[in-house]
Amino acid sequence: MAPPAARAASVPARLHEVDGEAHVPHEAKLQPEAQPSTRTAATPPPPPPPITRRRSSPPSKKSLFTRPAPPPPLPQVAYFYDPSVGGYYYGPGHPMKPHRVRMAHALCLRYGLHNLVEVYTPARASADDMAAFHDRSYLDFLARVTPAGVKAAATGSAAAAAAAAAAAAAAGAPPPVTAAELSRYAVGDDCPAFEGLATYSSIVAGGSIGGAVKLNHGLADVAINWAGGLHHAKKGEASGFCYVNDIVLAILELLKYHARVLYVDIDIHHGDGVEEAFLTSDR
Image (tube, rainbow, N blue to C red):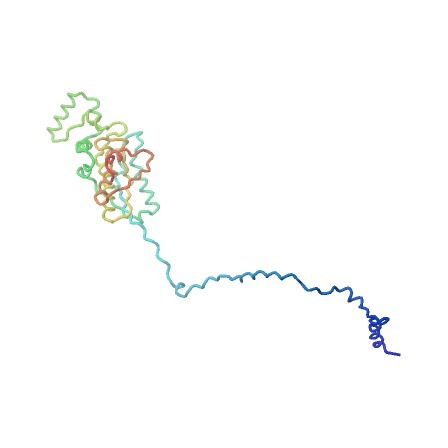
C-alpha cells in the first residue's frame, strides 16, 4: 500500500486526466484570465515641494554686546515766570485772575517740572518794546490810568478835570486821564483800571518777547509764559481783559529771523487782536 504522501500526490494527477480529456481544476476556473490593458496610465501629479521651516539666524556675537542707541535728547524749554505777576488784581467779581498763573507755577514746582526746564525771570518790556505794535498815545494812557483817576474822570465835571490837569502839570506829574480817553481806549468794565496796570502789562509782554528771543537764537526749542496769551488787545485799545497783545509782539520778534510764523490759538474765544494785527500780511 502506498504511503499517505504518495496518495495525496496521485489525486491531482487523476483529476487532470479523466477519459483521456484534460480537466481544469476548479480553483483555476474561478480566476479570470488576464486581458491585455488598452488604457494608458494617467501621469501622477508631481509631489508637493518639501516644507522648509525658516529658522531665524542666531544673533551675532557683535550684536549681543552692542549698546542700544541713546534716546533723543529732551527739548530745551525756556520757562518765564515773574513771582509778582500773581499779585495783580482786576477787582472783585472779575473773571480774569492773574493769581492762577501763580497756582500753575506752584503745580510745576510740586511735580518737579522746574528741574526739566530753564527758569527765567522775564525782563519787563519797555514802552519802546511795546510800541513795535501799540500806539504811543495808548501806552502813555496805560502808564497814567489809575482806579482813582477813572473815578474822578467819571464823576467830575469838565472844569474839575481841567483844574486837576493844571495841578498835575504844576507838580510835574503826568496829567490825569479824562472821560474821553477812557472811552477812546475802552478801559472800563471788561478792562478795568487797577493798580500797577502798566507794570503788569510790561511783565506779560516781557515774558513772551523773551521767549521769542530764545527761539530766534536757538537757545530753546520751546518757550513757556503762563501769563501771556492776551490775544484780544488791539493796537490802540483794550479788549477782552487784555491791554497789551504779547502774542503780536512775540510774533513780530520771531519775524525778524523767520519768513513766516504759524499761530495756533487753542483758546475758546477768537483771537481777534492777533488776526487784526496781521490781516494784511501773509507772514
